[in-house]
Amino acid sequence: MSEQKFPLPVGSVVQVKGSDQKFMITSQLPVAEIEGKKGYFNFGAATLPLGMYNQEMIFFNSEDVDEIIYLGYVDANFQEFTNNYEKILATIQYENLKNSISDNNDEDNLEEFVFWK
Image 1 (cartoon, rainbow, N blue to C red):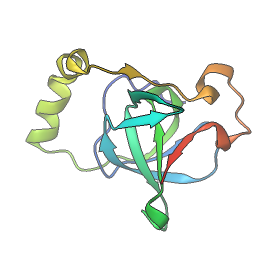
Image 2: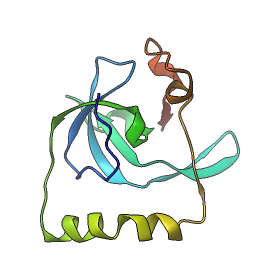
Image 3: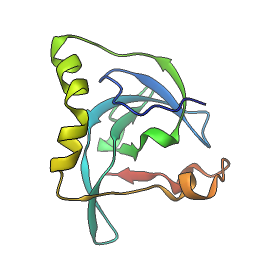
C-alpha cells in the first residue's frame, strides 16, 4: 500500500482499497456535495478503460490509494503545485471529506466510494 502524502499528477493510474478496478486521476482537490455536505477530496478519477463514461467520476483521498500503477504527467507546473500543496490545502474553505472505506478498512466494498454523476 502506498502512503502518498503529496498529490499525484493528472493521468496517474491507481487502484484504490477495496477494488480491482483501475482509475485514472483527472482532477486535483475536487469539491463535491455529499448528502448536503460540501467538501473536497484529494482526487477525482475516471474508470479505465472507458474513462468518463456516463459523466461518472470517483472521488477519493490519498489514504484510499492502494497501488500506484502509472505515474502521470509531471512538468514544472505540477512540480510548483506540489511545492505549494500544503499552502493550497490551507486556503480551501471546505473540509476534507472521507470515504467510509478508509475509516473502517472494509476492503470488499467499493460502493463506499463516492461516485458523482
